[in-house]
Every structure is written in C-alpha cells, then in structure tokens.
Image 1 (cartoon, rainbow, N blue to C red):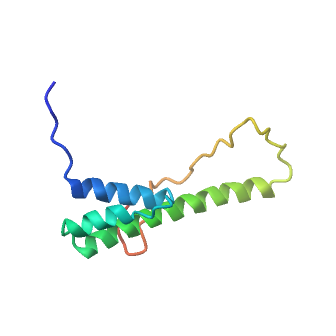
Image 2: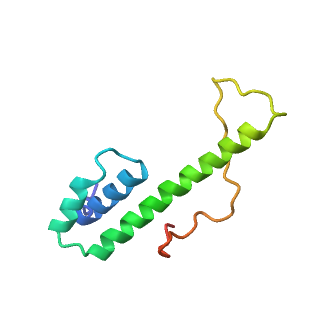
Length: 106
C-alpha cells in the first residue's frame, strides 16, 4: 500500500472550521481560526469559508423547518409514531443555492 500525501494543515483547518459552523459546534471554530491566521491564510478566504458554511447551515435549517411546518399543518395526516422517522425527502433539483455573497457551496 502506498502512502497518500496528507492534506495541507490549512485545508484541514478550513474543512474543520466549515463543518464546525455548519454543525453549530459550541467552540465556534476558534482553534481553526487561530491556525488559519498563523498559517497566513488571507482574510477573504477565511470569510468565504465562513459564508459558505453559514449558508449551508441556514439552508439546512430552513428545509427542516419547511418539512416540520408541512407536517404540522397537514391536519388530515395520521399521527406518526415516535419510533418512526419523518422520512425527509428533498424535492429540489439543485444541490444547493449560492451563498449570499455569490459563493457556490457545491
């Protein structure tokens, strides 16, 4: 088995920062921000990562809220037993919408 090259530490920090933001991690990516700043990553690149991560987080929350609102307003639908999942289906044809600043998240 050949050894694969490791990701650059700044890439790992960006991925970790973005996933922490999207997951609403309580540490808020402070460690990753420090690493990125020390590595000399330009502010505009960090800002782009933060914008994309927030957009993905917010879009996911909106889609979950829409499903919940649909379920709660559907009075004719029988109650779903607690042991069953809600079987959330995404019906949009696009994988995501651009972040407010125009950054693509796909």
